[in-house]
Amino acid sequence: MDDRIWRNISIGLGVVCALLIAVAGALMIVGKPAQTTAGPTPTPTSVAVATATGSAVATPTLVATPTATSPAGPGASPSQSAPFATVLFNGLALDAATDKAGTIRTFTFETDGVGPLNLSVVKTSAGGTTRMCAKVDTQKLVCKVGSLPNFVKAYTDTERSTWTVTLQGYNTSKPTVDLSLTWPTKAASVTISHLRFQGSTTAGVSEGLNGFTATFKPRAGGTLGLQASWTQVIVNAQVTLVDATSTPTVKVDQRDYTSATYITPDYSFNVDATRSYQLKLRNLSANTTDRPDLTVKLSFP
Image (cartoon, rainbow, N blue to C red; front, side):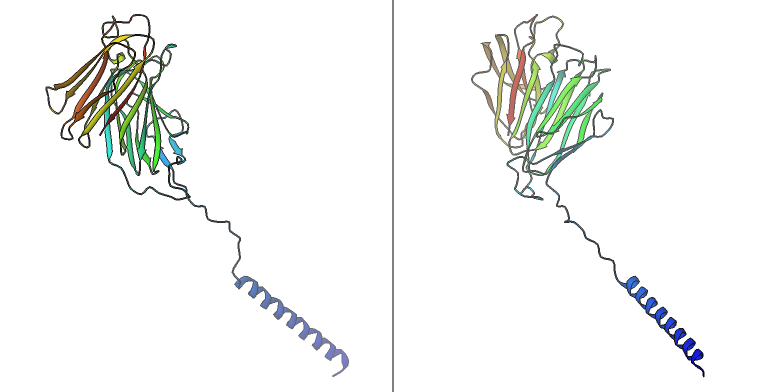
């Protein structure tokens, strides 16, 4: 063979080798698993959540950060659940949102441990429309509007949280409603602000604007307690407690407070876990011009 033939053979073999090397490199790249850089996996934080159902006028989810008494650290959970308390506030007359002198009925209570809540308007006057709002700790209020608005999927999973529920007539509506509250708590206590204490002999004023009525069943035997104060007027007030276990109800206690601006001493009575009770506070005096603002704290075992 002459030199040109050997030269052509050498060039061809070189090209074949180059192709084989390239193919092998490609196979190595394809066969090697891809590497990605991932950030740290987020750890969920213990929160209290309330979910609203039905039509809402605000975002239907509340998220609350744990209070200072909650277990420290992400993902912490309460050690145990507390028993559930239920109280029904009967015949609350609400002020309309368009009433410039009106106030918003406000209910505040604390939860302990893990468990669901049920915050519901369970009865309303014919044609009534209520704006009901709820929040946990310092979060913003979440509101619902309807004849029977409720937060039936509220839930707490912190050691201690403070819940607030507000009621107001929607637009020009001035309904009379029953409000039911159920929540897990070691010591059942509800503070109610901006109730009316209008007077029982005031013409045209419904009983729902004169104090409050609460129905409850103690979870254990112990002491029922009531604190109450009001603005602007000196009145003759009366507290009545009845056994509501069966019909007809039976009055078991009654106290009168003469020429008073608050209840003193605080009302208390020993109650039985086997019975249901209804507690009433009324202004027995007349008041035709003012709107006394009533604040009460109700506690029961």
